[in-house]
Amino acid sequence: MSNGPAGQAARSTTVRPAYETAGAGRRASSRTFLHTADGVRIDALYEPGAAVYETLTPSTDHPAFVVAHGFTGDVDKPHVRRVATAFARYGAVITFSFRGHGASGGHSTVGDREVFDLAAAVAWAREQGHARVVTVGFSMGGSVVLRHAALNARQTEAVVSVSAPARWYYRGTAPMRRVHWLVTRPEGRLLGRYGLRTRIHHRGWNPVPLSPVEAVPRIAPTPLLLVHGDRDGYFPVDHPHMLAEAAGDHGELWLEPGMGHAEHAATDALLARIGDWAVGAAG
Image (cartoon, rainbow, N blue to C red; front, side, top):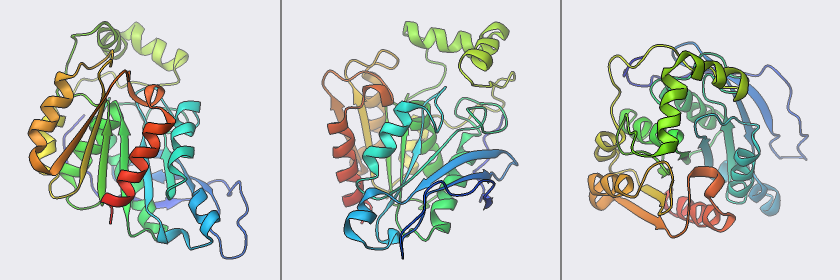
């Protein structure tokens, strides 16, 4: 695993046809394998969004939301689909499976080389003609959107990080101790592969990637929203406070009362508020 900057993704290659037919002048949904700069195939889905069909305006007039799921998620998981449906009210949506997850190739590096996966998805959004792209990440995906924005200056118009850690190697909660067992132990990786459809790389980080709290100051002036639940069982509230302090004036923190962790805990009302913020922040 390495901490090199995320390069430009190779041009996407459609390997299976669109599963929806667009009306006259409308863009269809499409399912595609993207090729990352380091040679991994990433399963991705583009949906033009309900806003396009309601207003009958070209999809490129609306922002594209690129959704980065949490660890053990994938593009077809119900909680990822629910998030995509919520954001489709505001623009086009690209969802994808990180490396090692679902039908994507490679092995999960738990937030390191996943920046290449996100870069490929953002590049695909640009290929669709979208002038405004918003990245929205949850948990592991929340750390990835922060690092991607820090390493790839001004490639997105706004960044939203939900339930992200501030620092690496955190083991202060029981759920995170279970995650570390899953990642570091051979029997844990076996469970991940066959029980959770997540193939985890057996090698540790070398070098250690830029941490989320180190990445945040480098994101400015791109608008940044940090969202975290005050009942998050994985990362307690010192994590979002550290990120907000590092962001300074260019970041906004929403500490959500009663919210737990990541996609499962994000209510439809919260996703709608995030969508409203993103449309305004992206210009």
